[in-house]
Image (tube, rainbow over all chains, first blue to last red):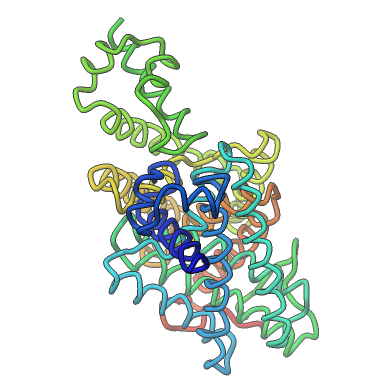
Length: 209
Length: 209
């Protein structure tokens, strides 16, 4: 079952990076966690740990972006959808004992200046999130520039709030970030609806009357 | 000059963590970079690497939050102040060749589940940022709950955008996050000014007329 061994290696590295980051993970930990002999590891991944880590970032990155429609589709109101996604993330992170919800972000932050090949893989994953998120918001009625603007801010707020919430052991950063992103979403939706235009770069994004 | 040796050790670990994260940094790299003998390292920091890393997080964390008034005070308009801070961060990160602007955030993300003592130090640093940021926005005229809500979202967006911008080698995430946070700020300011109330948890934060 060579496919299964490969999958076990990728899953093991993904889980190890979730808890320990990239540098702290050893090849020995990988073979132990995946119940794969060393030879098998290098058979499937001649490049060793960096190559398995790249596969793990791609695999988990592809899975994470699937959460976007899963969490947001049930909400007809787009503002509620964004708020609901952040609230669900806050509930999950607390209930899981402050698990690292996104090893892609934390590993990227750790290795962006020291592991150029892995940084490029992380950039590819994040780039695909931006593209897929843009498509999602276009499907929900925003313009393409608005959608890209919104998903960039949401991904930034989410990645940063994950770190703050895990570090503080508090859902407060995720909830505050979610309310800010819900407000941003509302401004785009309201702009589309009533003005036929929207708050874009350089303009005031929203103004209370 | 034992104070100077201690400072050199802390500075060296701060710089090493900026480029490599926490786990990848070795005691040998620390003594080399700080030009301090091994005995001197353990004289000043009997706990070794984790203890110097804690000191580095505290020192750089205290320095980073000083940037808040430095970047924002020149702007009379609070929305412009927040936008200006993110724009300045984007310019600096690009001009520096995508340097890690905040090792506190990336190290926290890396070690939150694996180094409990260091996580607590990071939580202490981030907690002080929240307190000082709250005080800053109160001084600029927002209420205490608004100020806390705003600084939490800003710190989340900034930390996440740092990671996205470094990974993508693009200022786009920082600029999009900055525009979102400027809009959030504007909504609080406008709420204070014209309604005597503000967009708070659970309410709609802003609505275009």
